[in-house]
Amino acid sequence: MDYDSGKLGRIRDRFYSMGFGNTSIFPIWLKNGSTVFAKLEYFNKFGSVKDRAAFFMVNWELENHSGNTNKIFVEGTSGNTGIAIGNICREMGIKSRILIPPGTFPETVEKLRESGAEIEFTDEEKTSTSTEKAIQQSIALMKEDPEQYIALHQHGNDMNWLAHVYTTGPEAEKQIGIPDYVCICMGTGGSIMGVGRYFKERSSRVKVVMGQADGETFIQGIRNYEKAKDREIIDRNIEIVDSIITVTQEQALESVRELADDHGIFVGASSGANYHCARMLAMNYPGSRILTIFPDSGVKYGNLYASTGTFTESAINELSRSALMKKSSFIA
Image 1 (cartoon, rainbow, N blue to C red):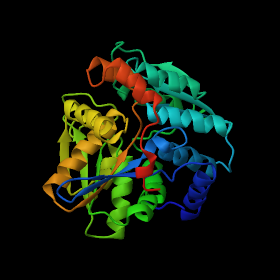
Image 2 (cartoon, rainbow, N blue to C red):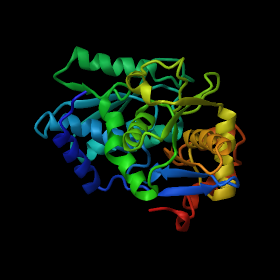
Image 3 (spheres, one colour):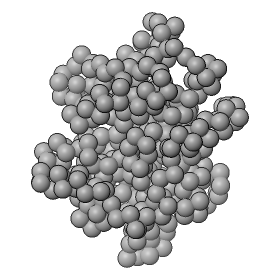
């Protein structure tokens, strides 16, 4: 793939000038001498790692439309990508339309509405959390009316993973140097493939370990490789993956609770999944340095945490109120 590095450089510079990125890292030291370095992506401007991909996807289109478009940016999603696209488009004076499944968490729906995007639920069972139909409908809108819509299609958009090559990877290297392992669970594949490829190109000794959901339990934002549809980004970059670790919802939520209890960090379920996989790797390789990411905070998952018994409602309220962590422990 051959992308204009000048355009990508301009997008990167715009990304930082508009207050995105440069998120802190939280180090977790284990007794066997290993360290898990978690990049705290909820310190992004609109609260998640998806700010990066959304910014690059939207701005790549602007670069190719001479900095101006009257089209509507459309995306099928159930969470952070939609929130990021809605807010970024609003700031840039662009219209956006987000298609979501009816089972999307209420807190997420509220954030989506606040973003300024037009929200449309897909016509499915009320409990459906699958984004498959939303993705298909967003692409269909563009095909039916290309003069009005641009489908960003995060699952197949190279700007998704290139955002991490141009921002997340370089930031992390400045903060901790080159790690021994990059360990991130797969969603669209943007984070693991972008950060993984960046560090693979920096040093051949870096191992890339991809986490995946077990395929039987639901973890918001995390998928199973064999069962995943729309895995274009992952398949185009799969050669950089050295091994795969599987995580269940129970393990992810246990890690969410551990991070809150032991470290004062309130994170989303995908962060718990990433931590579970990174910690497993760290325990198997004493003295190793593992880089992962915590994609978002726990503030959008109150209903999930209460219904699964992860936290009591009073604990959720307290964790949501108290700032998300002990800032003195961060690596800036």
